Amino acid sequence: MPESVMIAEMTWTDYDDKVRNQKPVVILPVGSLEQHGPHTPLATDTLIPTAISKSVAERIGGLVAPPISYGYKSQPRTGGGNHFPGTTSLDGETLIRLARDIICEFARHGVRKMIVMDSHYENEMFLIEGIDLALRDLKAQGVDDMKIVKVRYFEFTSDETLEAVFPDGFPGWPLEHAGVMTTSVLLHLHPELVRMDRVPNHPPMHYPTYDVFPSDPERSSSSGVLASAMSATAEKGELLFSEYVEKISDAMAGEFGAAATPKA
Image: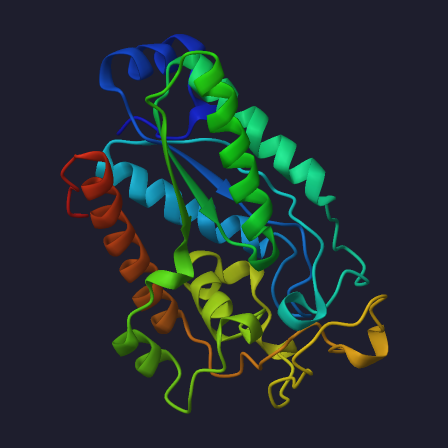
């Protein structure tokens, strides 16, 4: 039985030995607890990056930290809005401090290579700020050899794969919330959590090219879905997942100077 790459499943002594002797890349998945329509679970943005992180870690000799399972507030144009029951969000300052503290703690353990695997669209700049502040803190403490790569896994989708997954046209990543991509990947990873009989069938949402505050739920998607996932399949999910794992593994192996091991 292969050793687990999940830090939470290791003893502290085994973890310490790996950090000291193998100098692994530690991957921190970051998601959200956010509605993803009536057909996929609230943990969608955490389940997917955690699974990708595990497969990438197995290929590049890395370790996976427990995920940050809460994200910044859902916005109407990218996540349906923060008003949906179940959506449980953090203030931006909280997410910044979480990322900052976690990175500094791993550095204290001796980790010097990290990947922040972001899945929730609204997290972007708060994670960047947390990374920046952590590096500033560490440098002030004399740690100047920490390297962090922030990844949004969906940005590794090739044009060829987009054409295969969206033969009728790609609506764009901001609208791909509880849509074909995430639903397909979940059908591949966790089919028991997907209710295809509940997938809304409506055209993609159309929003103005500006944001209004406070948000008006009446101007948002009533289902929480921004573009229908009716054409999602497990086969598309396997294609997407395999591409993400392969391309991210190759890219991170290049960044950190290690060879990625092809998946058996």
